[in-house]
Image (tube, rainbow, N blue to C red):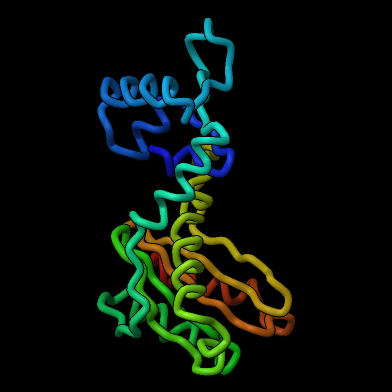
Length: 202
């Protein structure tokens, strides 16, 4: 539940119940207890019965930052793709990006795995920096859960000059990532069109 409210994210009990699969009664009790501990606060008038949005307090944000390093398991050993989609994803980004490709990763809801790493790119980071980066990627998964009626976000691209990071999510909510550099001469539209058919299996 804390993950769903972190980084200034606001959510109603109904939204939290859907994202955490907790029963509404258990969730309401948890919210009450966390409010008493100054971890969660209400961002609406107390008398409001609908649209009661909750978020983390400053203390709650600090608590989550401490907890998330322990609950997100990261495997940074190179490992081969294990599913048809992950195999196709690695093959596709390798073909499309060539020597621009730096890292390819996957998060299946339980652990993050490194599916490919360019030797030069990997040498730029310590093991701890790679682990912290993976945890940040997993945490950012929530950004794909945008609440737009009849729309579902399946991909995002972040630009960190001169590097770009593509994040895509399949129907089973597995998360795939590919970083590449430089990105200036990459046809982003064509890249997304191809990745869409791979990840969404259309």
